Each structure stands twice: as structure tokens, then as C-alpha cells.
Length: 153
Image (cartoon, rainbow, N blue to C red):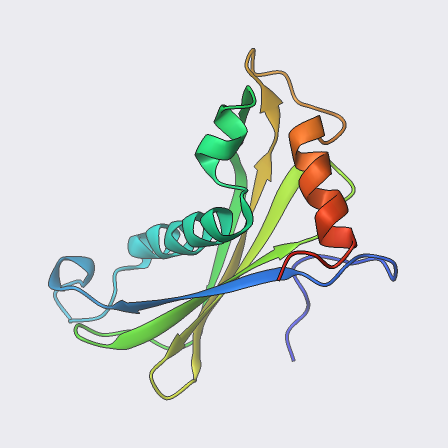
């Protein structure tokens, strides 16, 4: 069992989750036919975008409220290779945080269900002048209230 990427408090609601399906394209592999390590951030992005769309937490949702959410950290752990033509899933998981940030975890699995890659990203929330927000903005706080009440699934 690997160490969790994010600590969670006992009173935090369960993480929000979504699943995307993909097939490894030719342009994503190196000369050995395996996915080049630099492609994994775009797979993580696929998961973040889908999760944002599903729960109303997409980049444009924040932007329309005058909030930007740049990536502060990103990390990947490679367990098994993906190869050209492989079908795989991207599970995106948003973990609760009391801070004004988005903590995403990612689990990629091949068609056999084996974990091939895990990782995470952290996005800070900034105002339109690029000042770091210390508290979640009202728009995000309203979503968090619905999340805590169990209304987001």
C-alpha cells in the first residue's frame, strides 16, 4: 500500500471522483512504443477537466468568478508502462481541503485493471490580480457546502 498523497481530516467529506476512458495514440509514445513520461500531465489534465465539468469546478467556472487556478505542484509515480493502442482509464479524485486550493489525485489503470501510474496536482486559487487567496472564494465555498452536505456525487 502506498502512502496517501493528501492527508484528510476525520470530518472531511468523501472525495469527488470521475473516470475517463482513453486509448494511447501514436503521437503519445516514444520510439520504444511506450507512453513518453511527458504525456502524463496531459492525462492528468483530461481527468481534471472532466471532474471540473461534472461538478461545476472547471477552469472557466473559476475564471467567470475572477479566480484563476494555476498548477503549483505536480507529481507522477510510474508503475507499469502504457503502450501504443492500449485502452486505459484515468480516475480523477478531488480531495477536500480547508485551504483555497484544489488537491487532485490521479490513478491510471490499463484494460486489465492494473494500476500503471499514480500522481497528483495542487492548484492554488488566485484573484484576478494573481494574489493568493487565503480563504475559498464565495463561488467555491458554495460548491463546498453542497459537497459537505453530500449533494455532489
